[in-house]
Amino acid sequence: MLRGEITLPPLVFNHDQLEALALGLAYVEHVGDPDLATAAHEARAKVDAAWAGQPTPPPSKRRLRAWQPTEHRAPAFAALLRAALRARRMVTFAYRDARQALTQRCVRSLALTVFSKGWLLIAWCPDRADFRVFRLDRMKRVAFANTNFADEPGRDLEAYLIQRVGN
Image: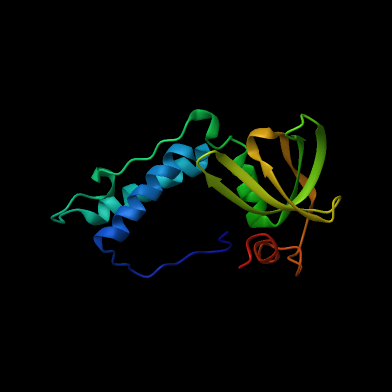
């Protein structure tokens, strides 16, 4: 998650890199929350504008497309989760697990991830004193909590990845 001001130097892409960008932007335009989809569309327009006059098609004209069933796209509240990630802000929500049990949660958001079956929030749950992964399609009434948090060793994304993924 990027925080603060962002300044990039001029970049040069080869064809494979440009096609990776085109596919990634097309995917985000299709599956992202409305704000993220708009940002992907605007980013692609910037690359297209810089591409003017090149002998090959710009990213928007590449024959790479992305598609995701509607039920696997990001809900509108994903934008709130992205803001919480940037601000290191706790979030609260109601969650219905696979057994249909409903719980109220207040967690430290660590990462959002998307895959073919939908979106996930990786979080540290103080009530469970452990990492938890929540499906966004099972979350309701998502809101900022009144608490910010600082990164703590053992309760951050790096610790989650080491514990669960091994790297």
